[in-house]
Image (tube, rainbow, N blue to C red; front, side, top):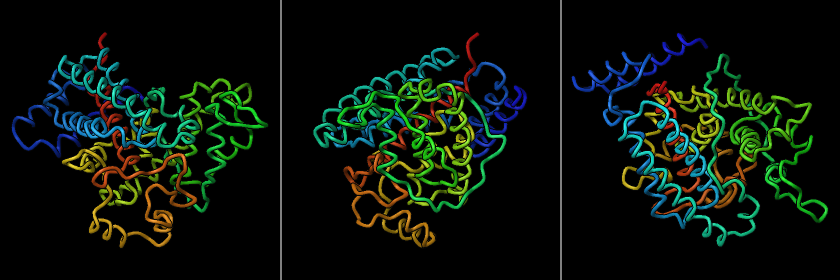
Amino acid sequence: MSHEQRRLRKAEHFNHITGSLCHSRYTRMLAFLTLTLLGGVLTVPPTENVLLTRVVNAVKHTLDFFAEDYSAINVDGLFGLRLGQGQLKSAVRECERRACDSRLLARLRELEALLNTAADAALPYLKDEDPQYYNRFHATIDQPYVLPYEPRTFSKVGDGQENSLSYDEERGDACYARLMGTYEEGGRTLAKCNTTSDCWDYMTREGTGGYFLTHQLLFFIFIEHMECREAVEGSDRSGQVRAAQQTMCARIFHESRQLAAPGDVNSFRKDLFLEQTVLCGPLGFEDFYRPDWIQMVLGWPDKRLGCFRRPSFSSALQDLLKTTKRARAQIFPEEDDYETVADGSMRKLLREKQMKEGCLSHTSGLGFGVLCSYLRFMVRDLYATVQ
């Protein structure tokens, strides 16, 4: 995409935002200033940019929830926090080298410090809760995910495919463990960055969708996170890690559009939508940062607690009536226990746990990661690099 095309895309992007948010002469003036400064340094104070302010406040609200209850986070909730931590860390770095004003930068640094403390404080509690699970997946939660961000949009969106394949949890977990250096074979633990043709074939299998597809993408994100790309690609797979990410995120974006097509996502599929966004967005796939989707997700956290909760009975019933029989079979666990695995298409690595007042650990972690990725994107998109 050319520079001019990107500039016009930005103008369209902000026109959508400001068209729905400008309800007064004051905010209309701010919108005009925003649009006229797209090609240069944005001087409108960030606290007066309505959408950015809402995103920052949402990040703070959800972070406060985790900071107050970090001892109840499970491994998968912390996984989401680590994804968000990488995005917040990157937002601070972006702000430092761009024309951000001091107020925004100071607030981002405060959020980063609070998040660092909360994430690290949760680790000993997780180890005590389930030592075996913790030890096997420790490498997924011990540090922030600072992923390579390559801004790009899809020239062609992947076709939707009927997902008739079930995700094999044990097979997938074994492939993850090989990358992390926790896989045992023949009485010994193999070094990290170890993979097999079977793992590669399984993680690049076509015809998948839903959580199966996001787990395939997660394999290639782990390759980057564990600094295994060079070892995995070797001499005969050069460039294939990034190519796989591109292909999978194009297919995932098609699914995300279908999920959000009614104007909001079915309450039983919000977890999947968040997972899709938090995995593809931080890689630089900016189609996931549609302004209407940002505004939609901002309405999902609990207004009092800041977490992402189980749907209310009435909301769940309404969404259940809209859900097909086939989709219901893929959504609901055999037992009403959020600690159990739902079904073959769901996940063992990413488990759900209910926290206080119906808050969901995994979904809240994903939601926090998504909010932080929105923040990082908006800092990049609103502020020009200092020359």
